[in-house]
Length: 201
Image 1: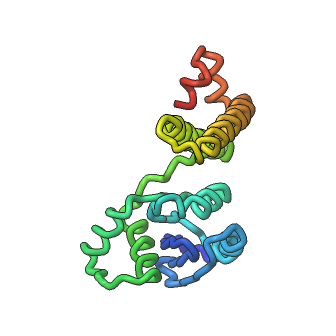
Image 2: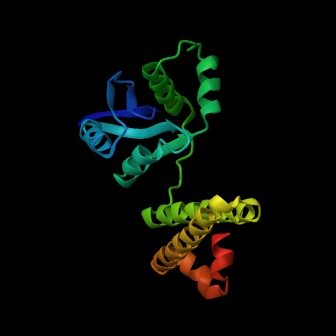
């Protein structure tokens, strides 16, 4: 393992991860998939990683950020504006995925951003289920409104969709309740007296 401390910048896209190490100048590219992230861990383990800096990209960064965090690396997920402002301040006006990764590594070395606090895997699953439940509740409300104005030839279809949505929401409720019992913070809220409806609002 190289004993020189390295800062890692990762530029995230939907399909790929571009990785730059500083000061070693090593560069890598892997698919933004579970297998791609797994393959990234081996070459990084050959270095003394001080910090990994990743821009928030609408959730596309979550897979690699959480995976590296689980492997004990200090990971900082930063606002994209911070990266852009730093690039301008350091004169890095050219823009490619590889250059963006280099900028993020330089950002980490120069500014040492605070480490991101990650939710546990169960918390992430709960958050995703609650978010999906909200989406379905919104869809249910819209379908109920459509029921009042639907033409006769589609009213049955609207009713079927309403019933399907109700059933899916029930199923999600059960999953959320089950997971909540294994997650201390959520369980504590329920035990404290919050109703399930209040918990998922």
